[in-house]
Length: 256
View 1: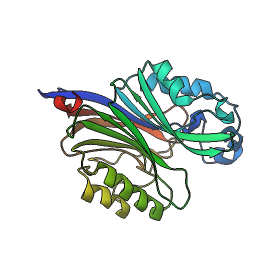
View 2 (view 1 turned 90 degrees about the vertical axis):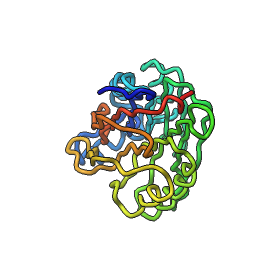
View 3 (view 1 turned 45 degrees about the horizontal axis):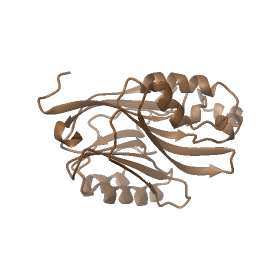
View 4 (view 1 turned 120 degrees about the vertical axis):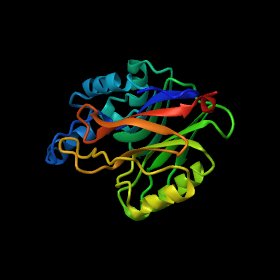
């Protein structure tokens, strides 16, 4: 892979890490349900494996990272991964809190310093979903990176994607990554393609379930001014989702 003149290549990764839990078959959702509420199992070991993978990238978007509840041993998993993988910049967006037993957050790890970070609650029938947005570079031509985890229901996803489309509509250099819980050609996705400069992925890459991937529901979408190469699915320790990795060529002026 050769980077074009005037471009900078960024290695990006999107990973639903399932709070470090292990799911290797459908029956584990029942037989290992305790791991989603208790600090048992080898969650720390799983995080160390994910940190090794994350460390090979420049920008990492996380979903289902525990921000510090009972099930993670009150560890902020985004912060832990940033330290283990050597990222200078990190931020997170707690979205769902079941008492102090199990919490969930979107997270962002970056080797580039963002000039602005914002987080937004997403609409939906059930609260607890959000989008985390970071801007790099100055002005309207800067790079915008958003991390989201969408709902299971199509109606809620439609409202959430409309909200995200409004956020990103004026950004010519945008990356939207996360767990969309839907295929890239479902009807509700059209609002993104019609009202932003984001485009459907060139290839469907199945990421779920991780042990027999059949559904392409995790995506890294980029705007038409960016160029993507080497998109691939990779294991995120023992999560029920595979992570999605990609190299993106970004205009150098978008990062100044």
